[in-house]
Image 1: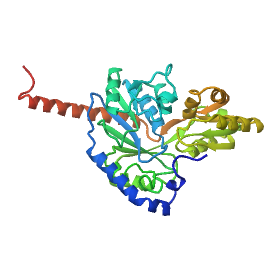
Image 2 (image 1 turned 135 degrees about the horizontal axis):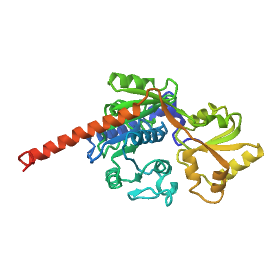
Image 3 (image 1 turned 90 degrees about the horizontal axis):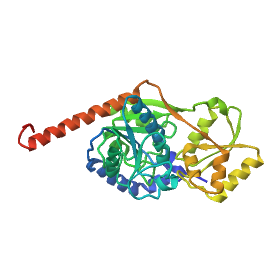
Image 4 (image 1 turned 90 degrees about the vertical axis):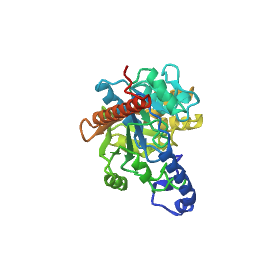
Length: 356
């Protein structure tokens, strides 16, 4: 059981990365062109995009949730926009936790919908407009940085300090979704989560580009309740090791750990193995919030595992106070400026000031 991302993506470039370099160059060229020529259609609300440089988990969803919390505190009505990765819905829809599950809309939208109105759509522009009809006055895009079909007023790129950008190569030779420097040009700021030096290259690049750099880490509310408990821990997220490391900071003892590919839907055989192993070794079971929403969308043994598993909830904790509020304020200011500019262009096009 391994992550969907090939392990060689997260080490120094080897012969596999270099053998795939021609394909990576081609992929990167297309991605660069897409970034530079994307339509970025404006909508009638500030838009904050939370993205990352690479395939795989860097902490986008917890960051988006923290932004929504800050937006509520500032008096806004935030809404989330997601593509609904691996959900079966192929139309624009407002996520209804009472009616939808992870198989319908994807795991991350289910987590987001517990915090604020969430729309999933294969067409992000259509999804953004749907959020406006739902009353949102601030849109938080969970991913979507590279597609850029919606114009955003603030682009926050999240990077994991432990993994950085891996071997620095573009898909398929590495985890980058587009060349790092090209992505950096379209970013507003950088958020580095965790400890480690793997993101130093990205940090230096952001510094040279005069992009603000913020730091944070994941904390566990009520962490003391896990101390000295013996667990079988399993995760099907972009970076399972981050989950294991965070759990160990609580004083929990991980006796057995199991990793699966990101967004993995567990089979009955896999669930049986987890349940049997925990029973034989007298272990408690623990997983992530994303995994739990996938389990609860299943039936039979999936529901049994969901009942027996605990969840490690995490929250983003930033080193600087009011950083998220300042990001929101900056997005609102940028929106007002472009809205004023659009009004001026409309008035100029009508041959007057627009007043009668």
